[in-house]
Length: 101
Figure (cartoon, helix red, strand yellow):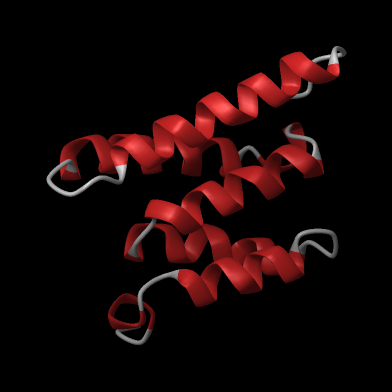
């Protein structure tokens, strides 16, 4: 997503969102878990990823993440540049998951 050529970066982002949405379809829990796991791995790299990439990963997690993503997303609240995105993503996680904690 951080390619020098703008269109290459856009294509990478579109492809990742397509994967997220495909994995989030009904009846694909195993695929969903695998994709969320990979996204969390990217997010946990933290300092090694540029802020725009982390921001996109947060929003991808908001599409299909559940209780397994809450701690990693909440950790981003400490990052001044990602705080507002992380807050909004936490609000998008289903309430039944969020309020169980």
